[in-house]
View 1 (cartoon, rainbow over the protein chains, first blue to last red):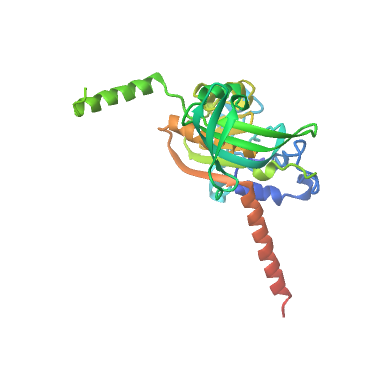
View 2 (cartoon, rainbow over the protein chains, first blue to last red):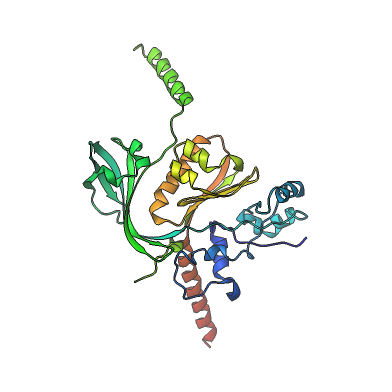
Length: 211
Length: 130
């Protein structure tokens, strides 16, 4: 059965990227072209280089029937001959091309911070430089309006945030200096989590006789 | 003015194991507080299927098959949030069997390419010697 080949569109593994770099000239973008939003999908343009293999023909039939864009991503290790043989007889489909970002970003400075105080219109944060890790810790007071509305509920004492400063370039070529604050997001506590913790606390309280 | 480079900063976190792709949806991530609601509602879903899920939600690109999980971003401002996101997902899916985790950086390729070119140069030099 003919094998179609494609680069994993995430550009995720080293082998794929090296392969893309060594691709025939016809598959490569213009060598001198700047990496702008318009051509930054170059890693995903070489659809003819990787291999996508379905686990079994039946599943592939259902995939093909469901949608033309359905596909299976081959693990990079499946490019070895033994594993290719293991997939012999299966149908091969192309991985859909990953959509590129709609902007380009050049980072100039990034800090990780811990919030130490939140007031009505400002907050304090202790910052650690992620760009130069040998740098000293800094304390800053920032206005609340620097934080996105959706992140405001996460802003409390002890919260972790990332503050990035850099240049953003839109698809139209407009270059902007931007400051991005993003609060760290961890899984929300569910009711069953809280119930489990409460139950465990009761057990410990009983064990140590503080109830 | 220098051109902005996103691709050189592409970062991916890759896990190999046994996954259920159909659950990896932007709305699920938002419901667990791992991405913003606005990122979930504006997400571009490429495919959601029992065999594969692939979508872009703002800075995040996620592709999951039954054996492989790949979360990536080419936005350097979101490298740390990418790590937090993957940690958060697998804190929730703590029963998911995973056998391998890897973080890939495009920059590594540049270094590897340079090393190969240097090696090839040395070999060629030796060939030229009597």
